[in-house]
Structure formats: structure tokens, C-alpha cells
Amino acid sequence: MDGNELPLHAGYPVDSTQGIIMPTETAHTAQRLSGKLQPTPGGSVYVDPARMEWQKSQFDKIWMKVLYRNEAEGEMTVLLRWEPGASLPFHKHPEIEQSYVLEGSFYDHDGTCRAGQYVYRTPGSMHETHSDEGCLLLAVYRKPNVFFHTAGFRAT
Image 1 (cartoon, rainbow, N blue to C red):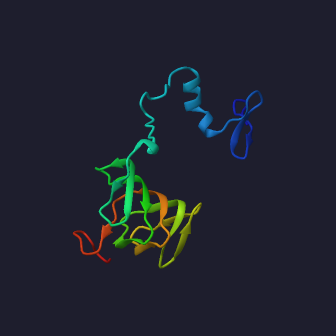
Image 2: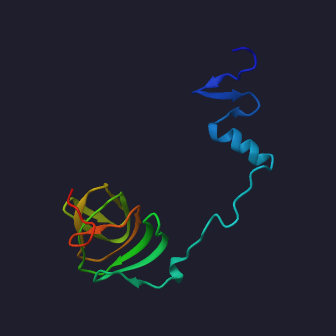
Image 3: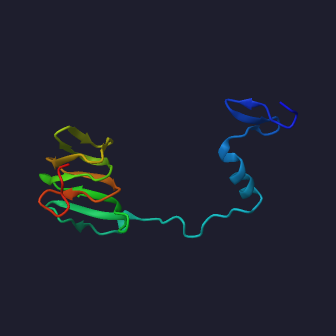
């Protein structure tokens, strides 16, 4: 060290008065503390699903509350309520799909996802899903599913 450098701990500089200085605590924190960075008004959008009505989906026995949608990008975060016996027909995931089951269960050829469990579908994967008992789940889509016998479906 040349006298101007701080000693390192696990690759991060250590200041004897502040402890370990983590990367996130450097420039942005200094700017924030000096008043140069301010929170973005309206940057957080709060949604109260309890005040929303369930909307019928295009599929029998499946209802939804859309919490977030970006039509241009194809992104959507949605609560889905599947009635007992509901099925989602064969489809392809163009991007990752993530689901967290809040109540009940649903399944496909790979397994069953129950309340308190999480499953994600890899880009390009294809399947159909079913729920014998019904379920409530939170799903996050980066792109809409593409269903068999619809425009845009390709098995490759």
C-alpha cells in the first residue's frame, strides 16, 4: 500500500472509522447521504388484490387478478385461482415462467406443486397443467404462453 489505499478484507476496502465498505455503500450511498439522490415519486406502485374482482380467463375454471402487466414486453404478474378439475391446455413457455402456490396444488408430467412450494418452467419447455383440488397461485411471466393450435406455436 502507498499510504493512500485502504487495507482490504475479503476484497473490500476497510476504513477504520466505518468498517468494511461494501460496493453498494460507496458512490450511491455517498450521493444519497449528501442529498444528491432522491427517491422517485410514484416509483412504487402498490396493488391491493383484495379490492380487485376475479376476472374470467380464456380457460374454463381458471380466474385471474392481474397485478402487473407490461403489454409491450409481454410481462405479467397475476394471481390465478383454479377451480377443482381445472386444466391449462398444452402450451409452450417462450421465456421463464415462475409460480408460487398459496393454496391447493397443481401438477404436470414432471411433478406436483403444493401450497408453500415454488416451480419454474424453463424457456422453450412444453406441457399441460391440471389441478384436481383447485389452487391459488402467484405466477410471473416474462412472455405470454403460446398454446398448441394457436398462431405462433412451434414445437422447436
